[in-house]
Image 1 (cartoon, one colour):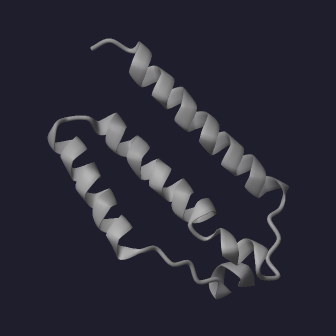
Image 2: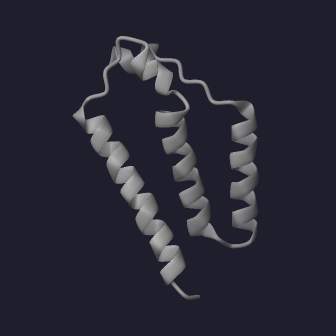
Image 3: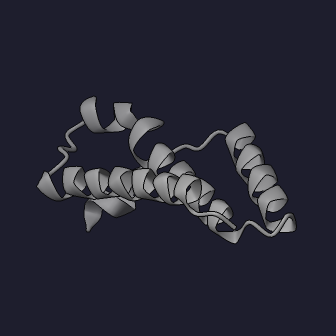
Length: 89
């Protein structure tokens, strides 16, 4: 539990503005699933890609569950993209 309380993750403000803008536009145009997918992609990016140096330059070691969660996250994104392409409105 100490790892969660002592870790500082940084998210650039421009990316937060970009996320809010894209999500708001997709919600205005009635694309709820797209807005959820965009938020999920940003969350995975911020958690694993943007702060990757925190995991490799410190004592924190990613365990098996973290890799499993990232893998399932990527599978969900791929399946959602396939669903967007194959689903006809």
